[in-house]
Image (cartoon, rainbow, N blue to C red; front, side, top):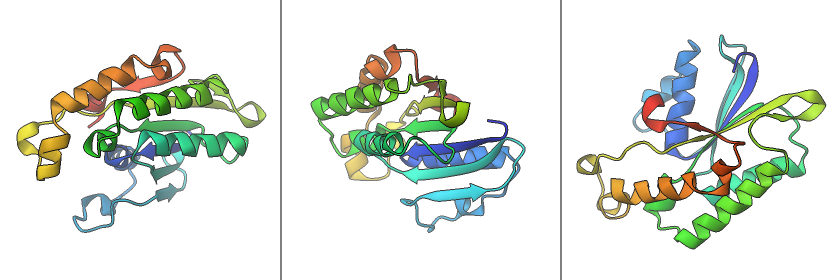
Length: 186
């Protein structure tokens, strides 16, 4: 990430990765520890850190939201940075019952959109190299889920099915998107 513009696009796991990345850079991110701070919003840190140049978080919690954002970037020629893109999706799709068919359709469309630019490491605007990654949802500890909705709709068994579906999709089979192990970075 050294000297690169990093964009994390996705759900709450992505937001936590954003704050972890800022902490790793030695940049204070006090809002990460404020319990009542708004969570479902875009965030941005600008400056020259020891790891990255600028880091943004875009609140796009569903796979279809990530797809729409990537398509917008593609239509705009991927100008203005986005040299490292970390995608984080799956938990909200599980929690809010995105059907397996709709999830698979969005994954396929995302795969095709990324393949249009060769995904993974690709040549960006004026020869920039672009790196794509998917942050795999962390393991769910069912006994620690705090709402009835999560205890019903977001168990480890349910999230494991979604992980397996994503791992077997064209998004990851084409070799263009790198996996970031959610358990390893959280």
